[in-house]
Structure formats: C-alpha cells, structure tokens
Image (spheres, helix red, strand yellow):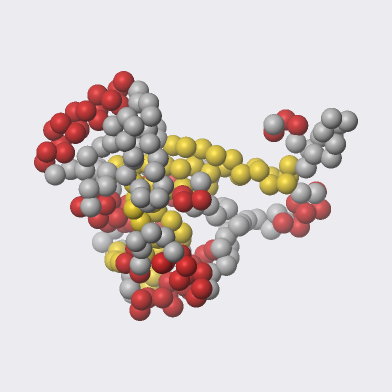
Length: 240
C-alpha cells in the first residue's frame, strides 16, 4: 500500500500523507559466545533503593528520543511490576565511577509471548540437532525445535548515557550468563535500524526481523515535529 500513500483519487480520496519512515530491527543472539567488556564498567541488578537514580537516567535519555516514554514514579512502577513475574531485580544497571551510565529491563517473556518456529532451514535443523545432542548434555540450554515455543529473554527500555559499545557488551554478557543459568538460550533486542547498539549486540545466524514505522501528517506537522535533529526513535521488543 505504500506507493499509494499521499495520493488521492476518486476511489481513494484524501489518503493520509506519509511524512516519515523509520525502521526497527529485532535481533536475536544466543547465550553462547558472549562478548567481553571493559573492567571499568560494573554491571549489577537493581533494587528498590535504586528507584530515584534509575528514574532520572530513564527520563533523561528518553526525552531525547522521538516517541520516547515520559517516565515518572507511576510509569516506573507499572513497567517494573506490570509484566508477568517481574520486580526490581529485572532491572540491570551499568555503572562507571559509581555513576549509572546505562539501564535495561531483562525478563523472560516466553510465558506471554509464545513465538514458535514452524519451519526451519536444513542447516539450522542440523545445527540445532547437534547442539541438543551434544552440548545440552553438558548443561547448555536446550535449543527449540520446529513447533516448540522459542524461549527468550527480552531486553527492554535500554538506555545508555555514554560508552555505548562497552555498556551493551557488558549487558549482553552478564544478562546472557544469567539467562543461560535459567536454561534460556536466546536474547532479544529491538532497536532503530541505524542504532550503533545493534552492531554491538550482533545478531547471530542472520536472525533479524525488520519492521517499518510509518508516520502520517501534513508537511506543516513534519516541519514542526522533525525541525530539530532527533536522536533515534524509541521502540521496544515487547511492543512488536
């Protein structure tokens, strides 16, 4: 339908005007082969005592993003306890010199977001079969076969103030090891297609899902909305 957007005709009068396109990329990587990161970065799980500092960094970073959330105590509470089986410990913080420079919410979404792989290429079937026959016996997580629910830890509300590459590597490694101990083999992260975070996270085996965000309005609204350069737009894995 995209070629017809912005046009008008007798059959389709006054179709909305497309003023902007943004692209989202959902990347999946395994909890094996996890990256190393700088020892200057300390990664830990949050507690209720971190609420004020967490709220500050979330609001500070989201207000720079197009479509970013407006964070307050109510929003933080609903995001922390509103997902199945989650609490403060699902927030992970990255610190440098006792300053929070990154935050992310990691939760196992398999119970409510039941994605299933209904068909699998031959080379993936062989790899999954070999993995489950050999490595799962050594304590590594079991990979899903065709028709099974894909167990994943979703990384949501990711914000990074600086040292972007090191912070995303730190989160990937520490959360990946936590997921592996829980028997979950995959991590899911959704970002803007142009976000450097995606390159640092590195999807594996070509497992990327791309989706487009179409924004409608008038040219006046476009000039008003996109007048100043926007930091990449906000998107989240559990919204796609």
